[in-house]
Structures are given as structure tokens and as C-alpha cells.
Length: 360
Image (tube, rainbow, N blue to C red; front, top):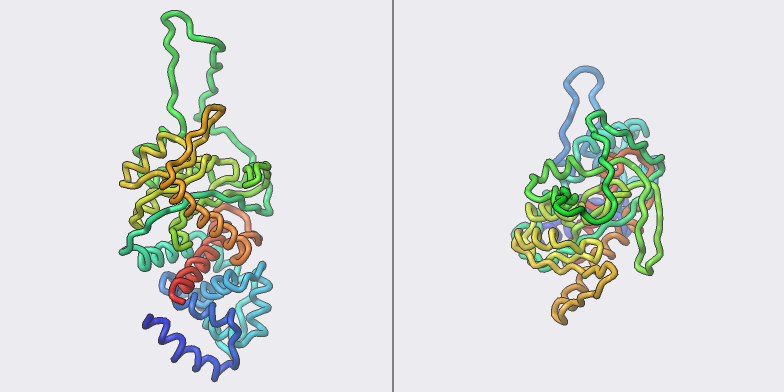
């Protein structure tokens, strides 16, 4: 509340006297930049030789502004900065110096993507605001991310062994067949860093059934989000589009457990697995996973569990707001790292927006 008071009664009047009237969007951007403070996480790479580089803190603020204002391209961002004195001043650019070119913005974005700037800023913001609070429910879901790139060709590693042909029919008398553990079983007990390293990240083709039961296909990636009751995204992962949602559950839960303390894990039928239920209980959570009958009889929730499961709509709302309001549909970069960085700038803006809604 002290931060809110300072912005409303000290910073806003000073900016109005300097650059004129501020639109509601620009006022919202000021609050967002003040909440995230992304410039504190920027490190300079200039070694003192040659021309000094442009201030990376101002460029990082500009990419946050791009997500808040819903600008689809970097060229559109630069054009808006050139004509909007208020936006230029809010992001920290000098009023009498020439703006950096599009190539400078692109190089800075590549540096931010490689360093995971938006991811680190978001993790720090979540720990600061929700780290000392008890979160009731964490809703987990994956959503399609369409990208403008061709699916990567799958190349077998030279160490890969050819798969043995499985014998058809029942085992013979006295024959013992080896039962290989599934992918979820293989994830159990592994550290988070190893799990993240093993996830598929290349662009490929995926398919997913929507809420009406129709199957949609796309080229690109899949974003997996953990969302709290208040609509704040707690953690995020980007994988290949073809990866099943359930394979992101264990890494996401470990990331979320490092940031907040929650009571319930809410997941849809795609995550129906005894392994995930056991893993959720091992973290001290209560798993509420919609049962997948798999041609059997569906097990319904108890009335109290069904009421709690309704909180999972927060995951759908977060995915929808990220795509509609914060640039999730405007992917103009290629490669997992850059796509993840673009999405995380939107997730960062969405997190600040939800925090402002809680205050007001």
C-alpha cells in the first residue's frame, strides 16, 4: 500500500506535469514496472572496449511495455516509442537522444532469452508476494502455442539402440517378460534440473482436444502453467507441442514447491495417474485429479471435492488472458528460448496485473 501511495500521489503528478496527460494503459504500465522492477535483474555485458552498449534496463522495460500494451511486433514497439513521449519517459529512454534501432532491440532480446531474465524476475516476484502466504489451490494445465517455424526433424542419436520387436500374444508357460517403467515412473526421484533438461523442447506438431471434445492441431510448442487461486501464475514451462501434459506435472510441482506453499493440486483427466497422485501426496498436498475412465467406469468426485475442483477454472482464465491481452498469440520469434522469453514477459505482466487487481 505504501508503494501504491507513492506512485499515485508522487510519481503520477510529476509525470503528468512533464509529459502531459496519461492514458489508463500508461498508468497501468507504470504500476506494472514498479511492481516487477525488472531493471534490477539486468546485468551488463559491456567490457569497457568499444562503444558503450545501450542501457539494458530501459530495453527490458520496453519489452514489458510491449506485453502490457499488446503490441505484436518489436517494430510496432519502436514506432510507438518514437511518437509517444510519455511511454518513452516511462521506459527510461532519454527525450533528446535517438532511440536504439530494431537490431539493438533484437540483440538485447536474445541476451534476455539466453539469461532467462523474465523467468528470474517472475520467480522473484512470486516469492516476494506469495512466498509467505498459504495458497489454497494450484491449478495445472497446458495450452497450445502456435509458432511461425517448421517442426524440427527428429534425428536419432548414435547411441540409441534399435527397439526390440515385442512378441505378440500371451506369454508362454514359464516365460517372463520384462516390464519397462513408463515415462512418469522414470521421472520419480530425479532432481528438478535433470527433469528440465530431459524435457523435449524443439518445435513440432501437437494435437489437443478442446473443451467441446474436438481435436485441434498446431505447429509450435505447449506452455504449462501452475496458477494460484487469485489468478497469479506461479510457475511455467515450455515444451514441444507433442509432449503429453502429464510429463510436465512433476517438474512444475517441484518448481511451485520452491516458491509457494499450497494445499491442493487441481488437474484435469489428462493427468490421471497413480504416480502423480503419489507424488502430490509426497509434497504434502491433496491431489484432486479428474478421473479418466479409459473405457471403464468413471469415478466421480465427492461433493466437497467437486466444489473445490471448480477452482481449476483459474488455469483456463490465465491461459486465455495471456493469449488475448499479453501477447500469447503474437509469436514472431523462433526457438524455444526466445519463445519462452516472449511468453514470460507476458506472464510477468499478467502477474503484476493480478496483483493490482487484488489491491484495488
